[in-house]
Image (cartoon, rainbow, N blue to C red):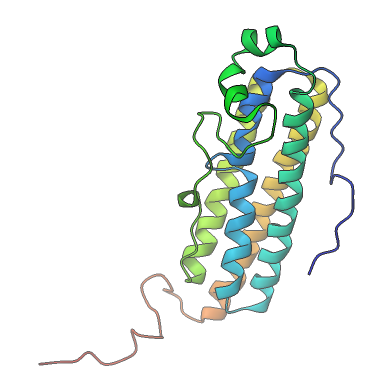
Length: 204
């Protein structure tokens, strides 16, 4: 299904470790709107999509989200490598370090581990696509927040790249929603589903 290239989608070369930044960036790995949830959401939803065009889009974007997850993990790893005990204590990284040393673990900035409740697969094309549109906007806002809090250009550059990809994915899902509503062939597609609304009611 995939061909893996042994390089990041966009380069990550952080010269100065900073465990405080690592503790907030990691939210885009294991947080509620992070890349792990995005990849699982789209690669799960694809199986119930009735249209090949939308199924292909979910596969493409879900695969790219795995590449973004890899970038975030590389950033967290580079920001926490070779830390002294003093740096660990002074930065507040000690609580994470006790549980995970400097391994990259899927956790939010608020310290909650990743959980399946962050994602949804409803099996209804409209419900799932609206879920996906919202997910991309929430991820974009998280990147906006990170860009407000970070001043290292080595970190800002890949974060800006990732933010732009969220905008592109939002646009692609918008195209998929327009394609879907055209195929549903009903002007009021939210209130009318020909699969069951056209059937007569059982009258007593």
